[in-house]
Image 1 (cartoon, one colour):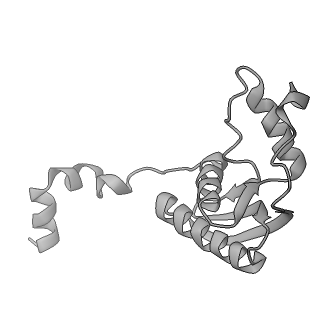
Image 2 (cartoon, helix red, strand yellow):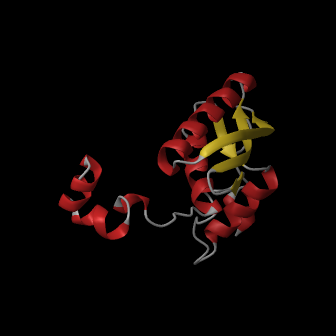
Length: 150
């Protein structure tokens, strides 16, 4: 009797199913899961003021004020993921705060997003495309005044 046969004989789990329990079956990860992880990771970077275009942010602000509208899309605003079986690609749209180097912010976002997504999902991030849609100036208002939206 070989060592592997003896090991399988002494380990009823390996003997029954033909492999370690963690390797049996398949895990799929939805695009929305990766988008949430990437959105949170991008927002953690200094110099990122907001995610998404001005229109999507305004629409999100209106939706957040509607009863039952919630902030479900807030985390994923400005993030699009394409998830395969073992790889994912991401597109992010960000607004950078004035005074920050856009190249440095984009690099930090890319690094933070790749680290978070790969650590949490086990997927390989093949690319993170970043579009800077605006720069937040110090005297710019964040969103439409609340009184105009209600």
